[in-house]
Length: 289
Length: 167
Image (cartoon, rainbow over all chains, first blue to last red):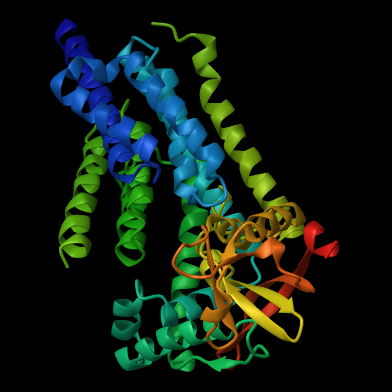
């Protein structure tokens, strides 16, 4: 019996360190695009590497929280939504660093992660429902034809050619230059008919998937089920393979880790592994290409 | 092992903070043309109306001619995100303190500078006798049946130049 307690205590401590380490890495590599915050986060990583015991100290995390506040206050209009999520998470981790017991730390961060994951999915579904350009597939049709992050998938999954996509990119620039100088002319995107089946599929898959995840997380349904967490992981990998907002993918992985940290199973490790997969994908597919 | 009550309410408190931000964002979308993509509403990829698909034109009407000014500063970014009157006023103040070289005009467009120059003739905007300085804000509109798109004007703001009124 004592051996089991020690094992769980070790496991709790190890998972606490992994959650904190992943959060610190998120702050340093995908944190706020502000030099002051960047300097604080980078210094924090160096301190954590040289003095690992500092990682669990409130003296380590409270400066990171303090540095994030002016950044959010000054740049509230330009920072992306997942940076707001990062800000909420920094609040949680910084305050929870005052908790000495590892299992209590994991319990509170786990519940926070669950609620923030629910907030993210539910708010996204709400925004898509009230939008005048989402459910009619207008948004995806337009982005698949004009945003170069989607070009690989647009040409792979539809009859749209690379030439059409390049033409559309140039058309957008021309439209921007014409604003105000001339009467607002109309422009015709190429490949509109071709892209409709793909746009409709992406629209509804994304919408229904996020709605389902919001429900599963909100009501703690199938919490120990591998299938539920596999759906979340597939959402992370699938969505961010196509539209790589890496900071968001990392944040969701950390939320998943915290959500499952107090469970005595391997699901926590799947989220940790997914985080590493995202790093490898980012380095080899985007930064080196 | 017991967890302090303060920590127990932390998850709900942070959730309520996030919810308040989302609710506020949705309110400003409806009332201030705030883009769904920013300010914590989780509306990225929920709408075509992203800052990258909005445009702003700055029209300077001088006696006898009209110029369009190009500005890449933070004021434009803020105005594109949320074109409210108070941000338009801020944008105007920022513009009036910038410099323009009237001999550098191409296709009715002129660039704005942050500083005067010793090498070329640049005039500060608020010293020029312009008739109107108008900010126009455009959103992308798409015809979903054909794929034709255009920038459609959504609002307009007239900048006031107190010093030029006296000239």
